[in-house]
Image (cartoon, rainbow, N blue to C red; front, side, top):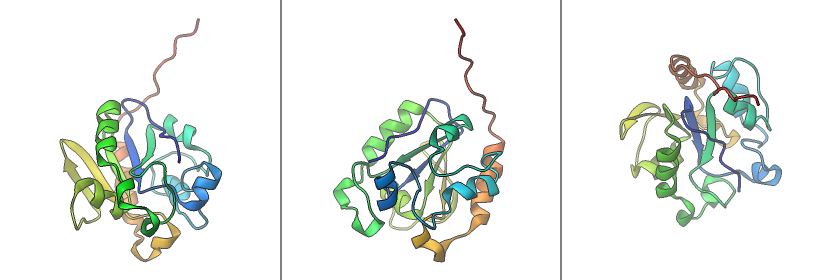
Amino acid sequence: MLPDFAAPGLRTIICGTAAGRRSAELGRYYAGPGNKFWPVLFRAGLVPEPLAVGDEARLLGFGIGLTDLAKGVSGGDAQIPVQAYDPARLRAFLAQHRPYSFAFNGKNAARRFLGAPRVGFGPIEHDGLPVWILPSTSGAANGAWDEGIWRAFGTFLREIPFSLPKIPRG
């Protein structure tokens, strides 16, 4: 549905469950009405300036990539067929890009990737990689919203040095 936005050595890659209906229509991450993703990036200190739907490439410039656990499908969590989740693809993706950390935007993708029936919000370690499980920014998940966990993640990310690679001019 949506292309991955990634590069080797990013500060983090944020993983959603799957593209929502509006995101699939527009071909943009976190485009649904009421989704808090783009505004919270700035408020929580993950990026130094406000971003909006369509700023995926700019987000890479701040050392943050995007992916989903279920590619090729879209909809709310209850609409995603179980066979669409692809933990093996995500493991290979992480091995290829080797980010300094990784984050799940919501518990559903984390549970399915980790094979755990229950997960809590906050940082864990998985295969030597710092992993954050963040409250979903989806408007459908407002009941579990806690921006404080996103702010703690922002504090963590600011400790990871990042600079864009120098491109030789010729």
